Image (cartoon, rainbow, N blue to C red; front, top):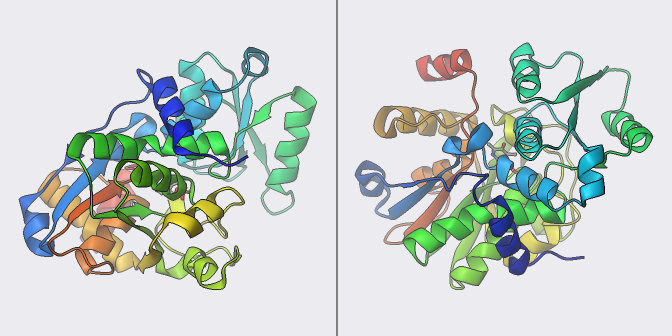
Length: 318
Ligand SMILES: *Cc1c(COP(=O)(O)O)cnc(C)c1O
C-alpha cells in the first residue's frame, strides 16, 4: 500500500481543528545572508512542540471505533511519545507509551501529564520492540510507529501542504531527516502543489544513513549516531519512507552540530523562536550553503522546539 497526496489531503481534513495551522515566518536578515527568499514553517509552535503531532493525530483519527476504544501504543522517549499521548487525549483514545526505565524524568512527566500510561523497560536487558509487541498483542493495542507508517507519513505531509498553500510555489524545499516520515510526506505535498520544486533532506553529519542509502539505492543501516540532533538519531530509513524519498528528493545533505548551534542562536536572537537542535537541520543547510539557494524561493521546515531550557542555555553559552 503506497501513500499518495490524496492521503495527505484526507489527513488535512482529519487533523483540522485539532492540530494548529502553524505560522510561516520570514526574516530580512536571513534573506540578506543567503540571498534567497526563505519561508520558515514554524512547527515549534505546533501542539506538543513538533510536527510529530500531525502524524500522531492522523494515525489515531484513521483507526476504527473498535481500535480507538482499545487504545494505541507507541515506543519512544521523544517527540513522537508526547505527540501520541496528547493526540490520544484530545481524541479520547487511551495511550500507552513504552519508555526506557532511565528516560529523563522531565520527558516521562510531560508524557504522563498528557494522560498516557507509561510502561518502562530495561534498555540494557530488554528489546523495546519485543516488549511493545507483546504488550500490544496482550491488550489489543494498535501500534503507531514514529515514521514508517502510511498514516503517519500522510499526516506529516500536511505541514508542507499548508506552507505552499500560504506562500505559493517554491524553487527549493529543505526538510529535516531522521527516519523520513516528514521528508516523505513533504515530498508528496511539494510535488503535487509545486511540481518544479527541488527537495532536499538534511540529516546530522554524524548519522548520514539517508545519504548513504540514496547513493547505494537501498536502505543502509548504521550504528546509533552521536549528535545533538536527538530527534534524528535513527539508524535507517523506513520501508515506506525510502521509496518515496528515492523517487522524489533531489538529494540529501548534512549539517554538523556546530552549524545546528549557530542556527539555534540565530532563531533565538533574531526571530525570538526556540528551535531544538534537530529542528535546525534544514535551516543550517540554507545558512551554510549546503544547498544552493541564492535567488530562489525556499521553504524551510523548522520541525520542533522541544529542548530542555538548561541544555539550550548550555548550547548558547558555548
Ligand atoms: C522526529 C523528528 C524529526 C525527524 O523526523 P522523521 O520523520 O523521523 O524523519 C525531525 N525533527 C524533529 C523535531 C523531530 O521530532
